[in-house]
Length: 196
Ligand SMILES: CCCCCCCC/C=C\CCCCCCCC(=O)SCCNC(=O)CCNC(=O)[C@H](O)C(C)(C)COP(=O)(O)OP(=O)(O)OC[C@H]1O[C@@H](n2cnc3c(N)ncnc32)[C@H](O)[C@@H]1OP(=O)(O)O
Image 1 (cartoon, rainbow, N blue to C red):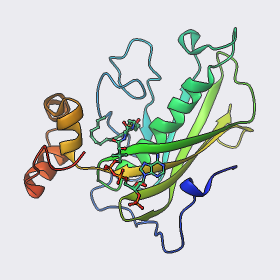
Image 2 (image 1 turned 180 degrees about the horizontal axis):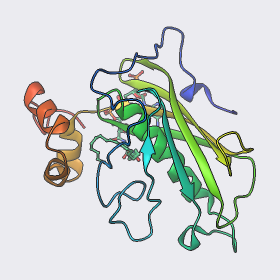
Image 3 (image 1 turned 90 degrees about the horizontal axis):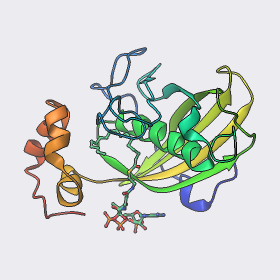
Image 4 (image 1 turned 120 degrees about the vertical axis):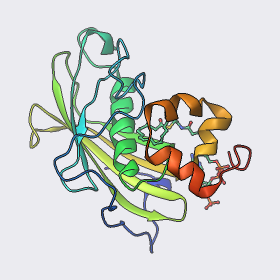
């Protein structure tokens, strides 16, 4: 992976153990929002990623490139592939049960990806320090051990739920999540204006 210093974990960054609240190994991860471009089942042209975790810290998913995902004729758009990386990385850091947003995403495109190809995606954490999480993902063609077509490295920044209340629509999120997000908000007594 060609990565910048900004997505390379500094000395002292630690990979957390699996969170006790993480889904059981092998469990399917719930979509965080039904209209999410990455994982929402109600998105008409989204990626429709259904992910699982083999170990509580890693995420695996398959993405089949469709007609709606083209850049050049019959080939996947690079931004769409980058979105797939962003999504699985986002899902993997959420396994640690804190809300994060993408701060920086770096992508290497190694092979063209034709329409109809199934990419086997995997994302994992290389370390967390303070609010910064350093993550990585890869997409392999046709099989979990197939050739690597896409690699990504990312820096995600921890926020609190006030971020989504201030800039988005927390009510929609909490309407779909009756457990963690609502409880987190109560526990912290978060002030929606407190943090961006
Ligand atoms: C969607 C609802 C979910 C709700 C439920 C949650 C669970 C979700 C579950 C599952 C998710 C599945 C997957 C989701 C989809 C994939 C994720 C996305 O696409 S997220 C959207 C795109 N990203 C943004 O919209 C961020 C926009 N940016 C910001 O809001 C701010 O810039 C933010 C929060 C990132 C940082 O702002 P500050 O004011 O809080 O903090 P400051 O001080 O600026 O940064 C903190 C540290 O990080 C560094 N930093 C920030 N941005 C950086 C960057 N781009 N490059 C390098 N360093 C950066 C800074 O230098 C600073 O470092 P120093 O503490 O000084 O050492």
